[in-house]
Image (tube, rainbow, N blue to C red; front, top):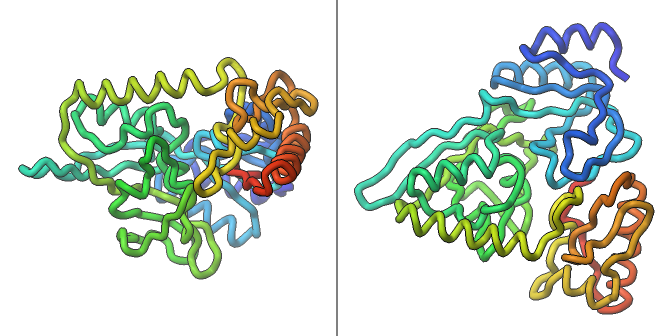
Length: 310
């Protein structure tokens, strides 16, 4: 628990009111999770620097959760501070548009992928069509190297401006970034501190607006037909094994519709574990373990979760 003296100090560091003992379920797409000691919406880099210094001095745990779309929060909650970026850290800025049609854009970590893609469609900039229908923030998309339709964030990122308590702000060029399937590998510094994405410079191409819109609409429709509707979830739950499909492996093991409490393997797409009503994190983890065990028994392949746990 955070003592009163530390609470007062943290409150003075930020403009937005701190939400103490904050239930986290409403901040996740799963609709699951206990109470965090505090939730803070950060609206400037100066606020972030002050908070990180205070966290270090008071030995407080912290975690950014972005839009909460790829996370399962424990029923016991989180003993620490959950952070979100506010509107001031969610901007999009056009840096350069060359005569050859190359486009360079700076996007803040708090910007939603939906907002960014809408801006690209309105501007006629191509390269992010693969994000159509992917929820979450730019920072979260970078951290998990989000992708679909043979595209991923690593394809368009040219550099990142990141923040950590020891190194403060760092500019990491493309040659300093290590991306693999659904992961940014060097997202921690040499002191094992998380590098928080303040902004990313991404490289796109000038394209035809109608073609870009049509491609995005096609991807959205394909997603709608293959993904569960009307139930809370965290997106694709397991990583696809190399050369295979997690959903197909789960389906082949006969697990569609399997339930633990109110957590269920979606009958629509087996790689979605869904909250059918009042699922707990315990329900989801129990279901996850059964899926992993039965898929391994059926195929010899051990599935790894794509969802992050808090």
